[in-house]
Image (cartoon, rainbow, N blue to C red; front, side, top):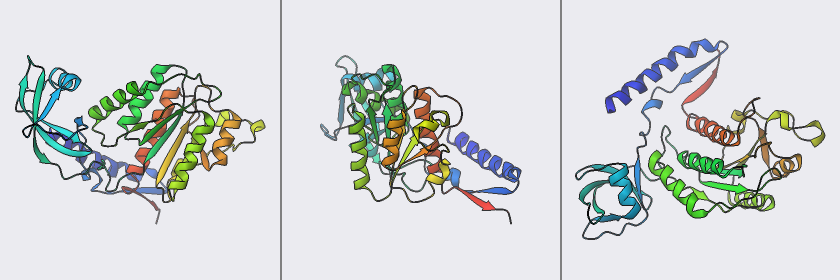
Amino acid sequence: MASCIAGARARSVRALHEIAPLYGSERWRVSACAADRGSLPLKQFILDSDKKTGGFFKIEGKDYHYLVNVRRLQAGDELNALVCGAREKLVVHAIEREARFCLLKPVQTQAESAEGVFFTERALPPIILFQALPNKGAKMDLIVRQAAECELARIVPFVSERAVRRNCPPERGERIIREARQQSGSAVSTILHPVLGMSEALALWEDVQSAHQAPLGLLFQAPTELGSDEGLEHCPLPLHSCLTGKVDVIALAVGPEGGFSGQEARGFIARGFKTVSLGRTVLRVETAALAAIAAIRIMLLEKDSWILCAKE
């Protein structure tokens, strides 16, 4: 498996070097070591307590079901774990099927920290998603799951003019986030806020701004939604230009079906948000959230790997 991954990385780097001359007046130089940075994240088991009994972690209930019936681990199998935020390698010492518990034993602590990231030598700034509630609860569940897989720091659902207010049970959200982190290997403990009103969401952003030196707010709004009668910015900024400087926290504001109203957009812009776009097509709300997150993450992850050079 490791040799297959290494071979794929090498082929990817070769392919990037081959297509670089095709960019004409500008050329992209690829850092040859980019494909070797970091380590591929693997599925992990999350333990919120480091309490041991006789040197073993005793796993019961839903966690036992996940390890034994879902992942089908056997005695002697090793697994990656996140124990109170620290990465550890554990081994299944014993499985008691009648009593429905298993014992895990630590093997060694991995060198990388809980904030280690893939494909970069430095941690990304925390990313916060301000998400207007979609019209269906299942869509919000999907957004939460995808945001947790992408290592977002916080998810802030809020009610906008074109959204239908509904409760988001915290227990359900926490379960979705836990499952997503275990599946994806995310080491970031994603926080899901209670549903806020628009004014409360904007006040939360002001608190975030005051706690950081270089905050960046990005308002994702389709160009067609910026009407001339709204007095809004008609030309969204290039996303790259927003990320070139120093940034220590990033907030993404994604609207509901139909987008933000002019008044809502002005509220974000008045608090320092920059208007950006994901293109001319109309995206579903759950697609827009994932596309915005993915665009920001890949630009940040490749920021040190790609260097734009002027043609000599």
